[in-house]
Length: 99
Image (cartoon, helix red, strand yellow):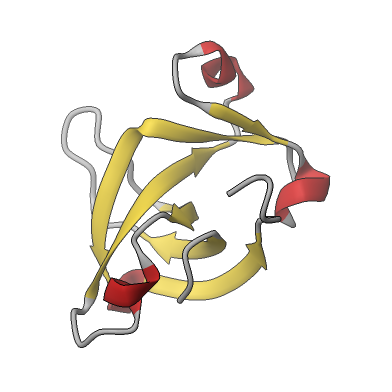
């Protein structure tokens, strides 16, 4: 796993406003940690709810930029730490300007 990659992750059952279900996430953790024996990864949740693009800090992600089926939003108000066992499939790597 490398910072800037988008992965599908099977998230645990949500509580309250937490994200849940299988969804794409963006790896934002530093690569030095990604290469270490630490088995968790810090991610930003990605949603297809494009209305969230207007929220401060969120980034609209065109499907051509992400490899996803829909235009999406990187939701930086939903930063999560996941065990590596939750990751199911690598989707793509964002371009350097996007990272």
